[in-house]
Length: 284
Image (tube, helix red, strand yellow):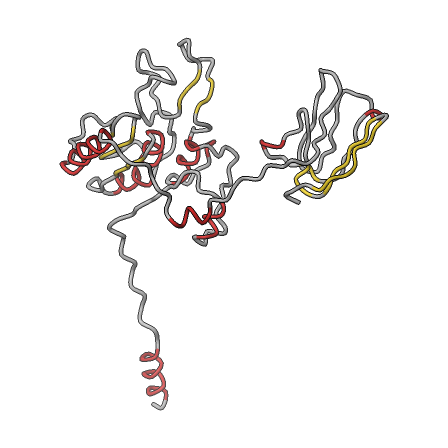
């Protein structure tokens, strides 16, 4: 009988059963294009990165609310070439419907035809048909890829006005009022924009590198191999190649073509008959 008090005390001390989480009533997904790395740090997004190689807007937007890689979403670029398509323009735009007669990559009908994965909104509509799936974006491809195939409302800027590809969907009064007010404001003369204090503090003059840059005097043709940690090679003999020290950058803006600048450290070049002294890179 002495066990009873201890049992009662343990039951009273036991934590209450966890209540099941209630589903959210609203989910807002915001994508900011061209957000610079310093703003990532300013807003404490120190670990933000994209794990796929095609960092264009359309592939990126196709991954955000599908949770799939571009290889699975079918959106591998903003534009790609398909030689099989039966039209003169072989370039495909990611958010076009090429089945529409006369469609081209520049004059197209907006559609999620190429999106092969379901978005969060698509899944919500499948679970509960009364769910609402709405997208608003500055570009059609962003609105399409983030809303998917079962959008209730989808609006984007087409360069002249706010448009939608969902022609059968009723236009909400709030959207109609906004479009009217926006068009009137756009037509009226506006003063130049003044950058806010936060932007002015970050606006520093650009200082270009004015130091020595080695340029190859060799005639064409030549072939270059580039990449992080790789030595530069060409069609010249090994004895005639310039020597360099440092780490080559694999970035698109620093490929070895007519010149090669390492991303860190110092570099020096030598050529039969002359030698250029080492120079320190401004970003080292």
